[in-house]
Length: 188
Image (cartoon, rainbow, N blue to C red; front, side):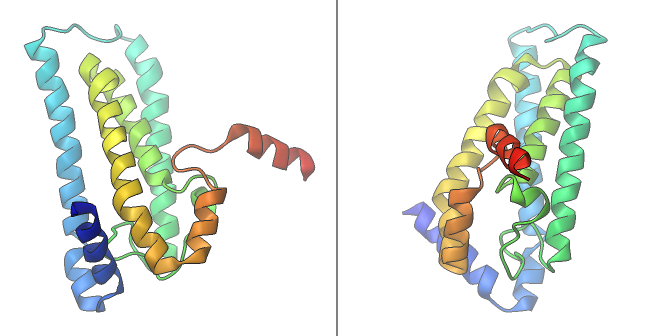
């Protein structure tokens, strides 16, 4: 089974020697960025091939694009900083030595991806791409959800054990629970 092999590859690289982790670290972001670029390029091609007009007229596209893109980039930056502070990277080949559950990770297990989704929606509105906003980003989100459930989460459970299992039960995957955060604020 492919997911089992990927889990083993991630686990071996995450627990292997430091030199191998450092060599593999750039591979993850380059591959991931390549996939993102392919999704965006595919959406733009689909828009042209289907002769789809802009999603929103200017300046309304910017009304959505700027806050979504800005919030997404800020969330990505905040998430990366927390990973680096624990002497690890967001790349599964070279993760932090312990569970990161503070900062944005106290509210969502994958805030970096949440930020990327927001930034991509911002880009989609900025470019006026119907295909990107309505088809390609949702598909990208679905593929990330599948990969996280089938590969990354089982590897994290294997490597981090019960603390990760408890964290996964407590914290949502992508988007914070508004109701729960409001109740906790009212208690405090």
